[in-house]
Amino acid sequence: MLRVTEIFRSIQGESTHAGRPCTFVRLTGCPMRCSWCDSEYTFTGGEHASIEDVLNQVRSFGCRLVEVTGGEPLAQPEAFELIGRLCDEDYEVLIETGGYVSTEDLDQRAKVILDVKCPASGEAERNHWPNLARLRPEMDEVKFVVADRFDWEFAREVVQAYDLESRAKSILISPAWEQIDLQDLANWIAESGLSLRMQLQMHKYIWGADARGV
Ligand code: SF4
Image (cartoon, rainbow, N blue to C red; front, side, top):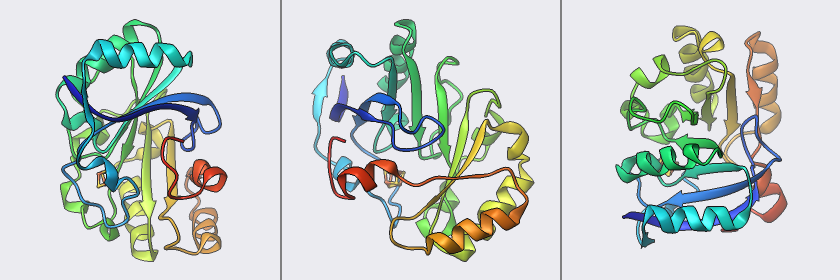
C-alpha cells in the first residue's frame, strides 16, 4: 500500500514540461525539512491506497503526462513499483525527488527531476551526490532552489564541479518563493555564462501560493 496525500490534474508548473497538462500523484511523507518547503501538508496524514487504486485514478484523468511527487515520493519503497506500472502503461512519467533517496532502482523509462538542496534549505548535507552521476542528458533535469546569494554561489559551483551542463537535459534555477529578488537572480544567471534555465513556479502565479490540488 502507498500513502497518498492527493491525486489531481492540472498543468505542470515547473521544469521544461511547464505548461503541459499533467496528472500529479502526491505521496505522503518526507525525511527532509527544507526551511522554505511549500508542501509541509504532505509530512503527515494522507490515505492508504493500493497501486491499482492509484492507477485507476490516474487513468480517470486521461493525461498522458504523470508526475509522481511529494513529499519525497521515493521514500516509500512501493513508489518504485507504481512508477514501473505507470511506465508499463506508456505514461510519460516524471519523478520530482528531493535528492535524498538513491535513484539507482528507479525505472529507466521515468524522467527524473532531481533537486540539489542549497545551504539555505538547511538540508544541503543530505544531498545524495551519487544521484548526479545517474542523470541522463537526454531526459533528466536537475533543480536548485535558490534563496540568497550564497545559495547561488553554491549552485554554480555544483554545476561546474559535477559538469551538469553535460549530464542533464536542463539545469533549473528556481527562486525560493518571496525570499530573493527575481531581478537579482535573473542577472546572476545571465552573467554566469552557464547553460541554465531560470524557472518560476507557474502554478503559484495562476492559483496562488497556498492553493492545494493545482
Ligand atoms: S524535500 Fe521537498 S517535500 Fe521534503 S522538506 Fe524539502 S521541499 Fe519539502
